[in-house]
Length: 459
Ligand SMILES: *Cc1c(COP(=O)(O)O)cnc(C)c1O
Image 1 (spheres, helix red, strand yellow):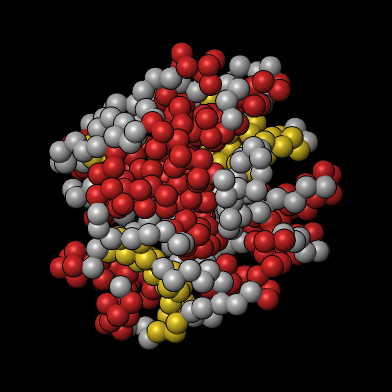
Image 2 (cartoon, rainbow, N blue to C red):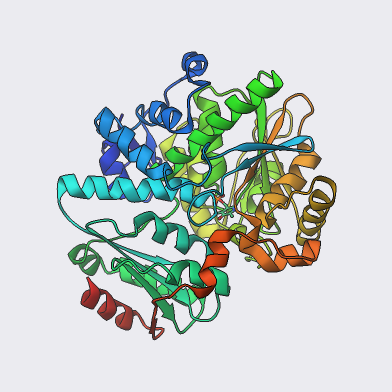
């Protein structure tokens, strides 16, 4: 399987190169040249375990990794999950909750980053070379990246966070990782300062090349691929239990990464009746699906912080399919967007962008009310991101297929919102154990040169 760029200006490359490249050199995102149709495999796949299913799917895309080695990578990646099913689907009221939070950092990003970390280590070992990952986090995503590569040979990871501005729990999830290849940097500044240091450092191409700098951002193809697996797995479980012939998914969305995987699963032949896209107040994506206009607004901080995003980095992949895989047209839309902060597509005869999608928004008040009601009625505590998806599912789900809501984090990660909603804390042993854990973190000035010097010294 070869990979091409959505902007059409890149020679096709194999899977391993695609993983190491991340973002295409022409500014586009990588996609497989053709998406396999797996409709006639579904019957054979429906009773497989999570890792067996992951292998069957991934081998169609990772064709330059030998079978047994791919199997091993997958087994290693999901052995770190605490649930025997890896990602169980739990019936709560009328809905199924797909719990994606049984990995090491209790968030769905582990599903992709545990795999990506192993994949990087595998490729570097065979090709030779080193990778020094530089990242910036406001709290939530940094720890999944750190846990994905901790202790891996030939890889170092440097994660900047704004000193004193991440939640103490999230900071601890990062700084309690003591492996010698993990470096936490508390920057004397804001999250935007951290991001700007990262961008400036990456823009210094000679420095980037000399020190083999890379990132683990959400546009890496391997992350999207790893996420397609749970759509299949959960659909099979729920169809078996209910006897239904299709399902619908509700997905709390920020960067469009998670829901893109569902879209690709549908295009490959999984019977998905609807994809319900749920945003918080940062609603660029729900506005798009309801109006055809994709227009930037300011980011508003909410109680579902991992969805506080205005420009969705994976959206371009969807748009590419929407415009009929026309790379030239897509490129001109994206450059228009870069210039004007807005792009638009035509609506279909039903006044929709895409009949597969239904999109809505859950504000803070709705989110807290849903958490409270699910706790009272079902004894189940939703995290604030998941609650946005549940709220929108209740509004928009069609009645003719079972609804699966993706649960993207364990509620214990978001203590304050949970206390505000239900008046008590929720605990998880992994997080409780952090209270007395030793930590390692270096403080650093809000200055690009200081960070570069730190990198040089520690690489
Ligand atoms: C990252 C994240 C999301 C959003 O996922 P996208 O792929 O960016 O749409 C939702 N919930 C949680 C808890 C997350 O960490």
